[in-house]
Length: 198
Image (cartoon, rainbow, N blue to C red):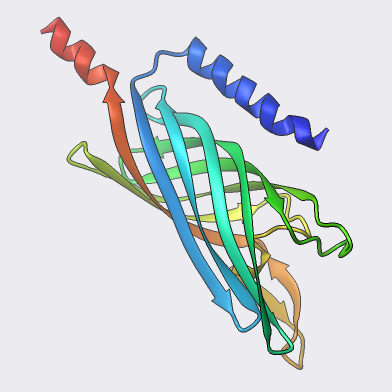
């Protein structure tokens, strides 16, 4: 069932986009970096957004991530990749709320270390600052919480908050990350329509 979720999300986005009038198509990319004494990761995720009206943007997303961890003086690296879908709601050119689902292939399985074929779902919800500058670029800076919080999540080393015991060992990860996105319009149908009407 889990492998069918990305396909279902893609079909949902196609139905939504076809049922709505698209005002703008935009290309965005988010990035983040997180590290601790145990490891860390960096990643980027391009998104193709279909702006349905002044507030709503939906579309597919992709992800590449490089993670590393340090154990007993040795550093291990791995690459993670996958795809998903997102929906953002923007308000007053100041803030946004969003949900972003991704299905990622990770070479690491913390639950079953003998397995090397791990597909991990994530479902981040959150929001933050969103501002468009001169109709050429939009900046989104947001904080996200992973509702699924899978034990094999490749984002675990990048979570911003942890709970430690009295000797300083991490006993719980709080699934919160930040993302910074730059968004560029690549086709503005609303502007073209208004110019034609004039």
